[in-house]
Length: 207
Image 1 (tube, rainbow, N blue to C red):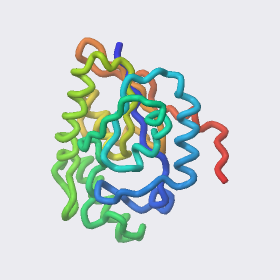
Image 2 (image 1 turned 180 degrees about the horizontal axis):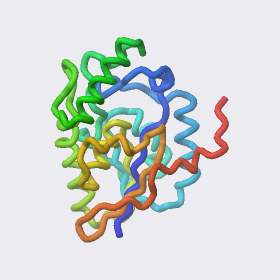
Image 3 (image 1 turned 60 degrees about the horizontal axis):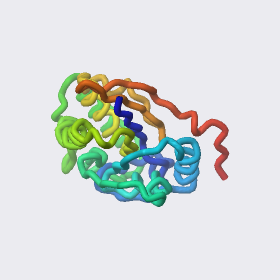
Image 4 (image 1 turned 90 degrees about the horizontal axis):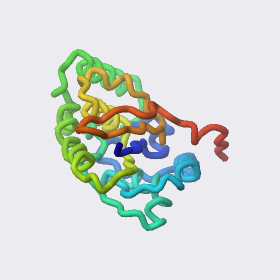
């Protein structure tokens, strides 16, 4: 069985402030994010990954930088980028923004997967572009153990895609920073081997 370790990137300063980043903001990890990345590396450095995939946004490859530095093959795949939130990217966390997001999430929950903010993407757009990385995972059998680092909303959409679930169920996948979903791929089907694992963060002290 092929094993795929899918993790969300470490914390950025905008994450800490509750500000949406999206595809259009290429932010760095903060101190907490770097500590989370180090904790993940220490827990999983001996797994023996054959390949690393990240999005085009540096917060993903910064999270797995130590694995990359060890000489593992690494490929950026733009399909793994975070959903583009359009006009709301980088805006302060206000009552107005929270209400706008609440309404958008409600639209998706009600099955309007094409709903999107001005200048942004819908979850259907993200679902469609995630088919490329899904096909890479399914059609490269020589890569038996893969590490893939991506983003919170896109990860929820990706898990729905891999598991054949409707997008309205994406809320069932928690996604704190550096959380792990370990997936299996066998006989043409993806399965969950570990759900929402954060054991590498146990006892992590920041500061």
